[in-house]
Amino acid sequence: MADSPKEAEAAQALFCAVVDYEGKKIDSNKVSNYEEFKVVYKNAISRVKNKVIHRGITESNIAKLLNKHKNGWYNSSVNIANQLFDDVKKISKKTHQRIKPKGISLFYLRDDDKVMGSINTIFTHVNNMVKERNNAEKINDLTFNNLNKWTPADIYLASARGRMVLNKLASGKTISPPIKIGKTPITSLSSLMSFGVFNAVMKQLMEKGDLLPLSLKKAPKKGEVIIKTINFKTGDVAKALEKNDVSYHGYIFAQTKDIFNSKDVYLKITAGKHKLQFRDKGGTGGGIKPTHSYQCIITGGKAALDGSLGGGSIGDVIYQTSPQLGRHFSLSSQKQIISASNRISEDMRNEMESMGELRSSISNEICNKVYQYSKEYTNLKFGTQEEFYMSLYNHDNYGLSGTGVYTGKEPNKTLVENEILRKRARAQFLFGKYMGGRLIEGLLKMSEIKRNETTLNFLLYAGSRTSKSSPHVKASDTSSF
Image (tube, rainbow, N blue to C red; front, side, top):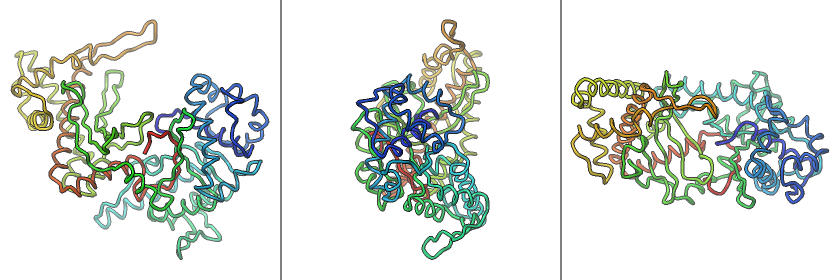
């Protein structure tokens, strides 16, 4: 779940299982909070206990979350479980036939071994096979940084057969009779050499009512829940993209009149509020060992983020339409740029302390380009390059107070001002604006078709909607794609 704690995912598995057992929706008029739910549905909760697996999450963990956020996570758990009961017939008739009658035959799983563990094992195998073929054939077929980029599913509904098939495939055993994909028999893990085949197996399991991967996004408002398929029904992704008019709609290099207020850059991907935010997101290491991580995040929805990608994946996606530009965003290139940005930031400090002005520290490609991009991609007015970087150095956001971190807990919470984090903030600005400007520059040099295709590829990869991504079902509020 894009913004969820694991307790919320476990709660959703439980609520969906209760609806399955009851063969009808939860009566929200009778249960307005989790404590009432436990009383009214005590028998159902007991009966589904062996069908709901959420490793490492206790009932008290679930209760603590839902009681604390009863108008958020509790309501969302009820709303999604009820909406899925209404809509599952449109997704898979055979799954609907298992859920509608009173009683329960499906398993409702979060972080279990036989389904989610098996899927992870198979995914790793297929991803490695594609990487090996890329190296051998000198191609760049799409791979994924991790399982969550291939599938965003948070919980799975699975039949006994679904669990058996996935577990056998992952363990290297032979399936008999085999799964038929067209005329091709899938008998073991060695039969799965591409995401096309793996996805076809997942889709067949879904069609037969043996599996339903469910991605979750908080939906606390009744009547604003949507259940939709991704990469499962013919044209489901294409229709969503067309409906939202997803394409390149321009860029935002600075969101306010003060360019130093943010270190990120945006691409507008619809005529509305949805954007791709490119930023450096790393840890502070308590202010001692700050790290850097370049990411692209889908923003603009009312609730949770709708997907992201990071690290070398950004370069891999760009490479599909522009190999040269893609190499500029490779992980090794990113590391070189952030290393240079940190050196520049350190040089700026040394120069200011020794001379009280900035000269040689800002005479380099990165500083030159960031200054050029700032002038070219905004309507803001700047002085000389030296004045521009003096404004950066003296800006409140980059001072000791502006970059400090809080330590301890109330009432002893204190702000620790840290020169390391001040240096990091300057480096982040240089890194973020340089990478963002380079991206905008590269996109503007492309044809309109390539520019739109690159923008679309970012969204598809970030939202696990590429042709190589897993078929799954998404439950969300109406702000989501």
